[in-house]
Length: 533
Image (tube, rainbow, N blue to C red; front, side, top):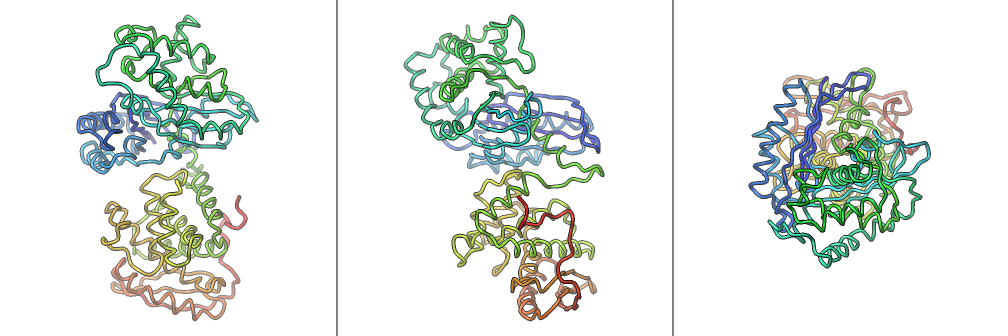
């Protein structure tokens, strides 16, 4: 099928449309980039400005139409720094959905870094064992990654970008050269922002550095013409001194002359100097002598992520970074992994059987979110068992789980929060913050999690399987497969009949079916939590 990938950044919006076959290969049909300046004027007020949102929605509508013209049947769209920091984020997302027909996911800074890594490493010439530094300078943030050709080792995101710096240190409409004392002032600010990251990156032995984003590409274009006598080519690299010379030259020119420099981007005249200072300081602090310029970006990472989830049969699977990230959080919070595994597996059995019985129409993605919610439902006990469901919500919501967008994390967190006691209502701020579709998903998933958790109330695994059967138009039956005394589980699960009716409009009867089996049947597609690494 043809798939569109859209990266809604602070400075630019990028589109990639690719034809993807069931075996995971692809061909690019078109790539587009438009300057939107979404973050213009935001960072002083934390609000996206009306004019910036108007530009963004207009370009988004054009990109959506272009994707449709290339036959895209599915669109993956994410928003980064400017959108995730804006207090009026919802207004933009609503307009993008209503006026451009785009459902845009807001991703965390570390998730942005991970996707950038996937995109850049897919086009990098990395040898086995080589450790690389990846740097991407955006309009609102700078992402720094250390990794090899197989996986990242360090991810970081800094509130340091070209538009953010321009808003702080440059007056609107100022076209004069940058004075040396102002250059040093900005240098000191950037250096202070980089202190912690530089300390961490110095722990690695870096073999090569790769720079992506418009800032690096523009500096590379200018350097290629000056030092190589030709336009920039794929995987060209330049020394720190060459780039520093280009940055110093651009800073010393008035805007009119700066725009006439060969290789200068038409839309980057006022941002190239702030971006260049970030490059200059970072390379100095880390002692990087040479940088390879990459034309890969976050949108390429979205494509790589999509390809990684394709099975030979064409079905999407949610493994890799997402599952690893969930297990890492569970271990960090000392979750009882054996209990978590039983709850997860029973919750999925209930989900599947309820779908077969016609109780809901949720699909593979929601099923996966239920699995993650089940694994993490008890992480809050790390802080305190009292009100641990609320602590679980906080931990999940703020852990920056990799591979997830903001909405998915919110659904997992809310599902875990409502795994016992109160039923989700609008008076709960955590639930009210979800959109209507997500609220419906949480109301369904939390019931399966409640039932599954109660079915292992004694943590003994006495209930080895469970399923939901539709009896008639007004009722359903929960059948418990037990291999011993399950009075505690039976008593506990009956307490969720009211929640079951609220979510499905059916009464719930419970029946115990003695089972000779000694454990939940093994599922080869599901990882054992106590042995996974």
